[in-house]
Amino acid sequence: MPPSVQPIDVPVLGLHHFAWRCRDAEETRHFYEDLLGLPLVHLIRAETVPSTGEHCPYVHLFFQMDDGSCIAFFDLGDNTRAEPSPNTPAWVNHLALRVRSQADLLLAKKRLEDAGVQVLGVTDHHFVESIYFFDPNGIRLELTVQTASDEYMRAARAKAHESCALWVEEKRARNGFDS
Image (cartoon, rainbow, N blue to C red; front, side):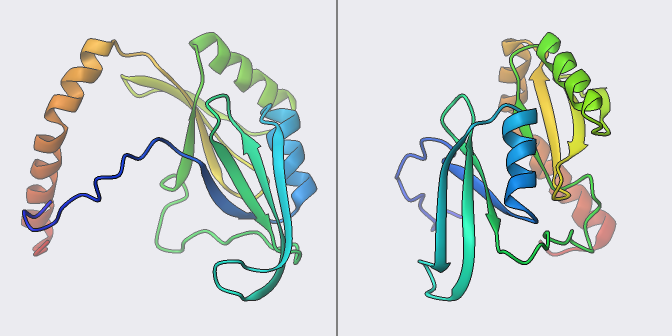
């Protein structure tokens, strides 16, 4: 961060929710609540967008994880799901959700496959193991479990800034980017 920029000095406590568009509220509810086990804990139904005043009838659904944070969706009533970004590979944008153990990861994989969901993995990333799949809205999800030791994770954190700076420099050299 440039020296003239100061952090807002307000602690970010954690994720409240992350929201996407969904095609159908019930299809999405079934997937997240019945299949993944995230309870539907709140639903807002409105005709106008509170932040903009724009007329757009919608429902806003909130599915809660064990830590209290939520995954949320907007059904705009037109049976349309969000389109993927044309300049980004499908594997890039995804939501990774942590599970407790490798046994839980394998159990989730079996349950998803038994429900007809195509699952990729188990993929070993050398610090986590993950499975990947898409929800009914085309959103790529990852279930992951940490397999690395706390010592490994501390060492990774200690060199993260250095590794980022090295990547930026290599990218500049390779592509002639200024920033």
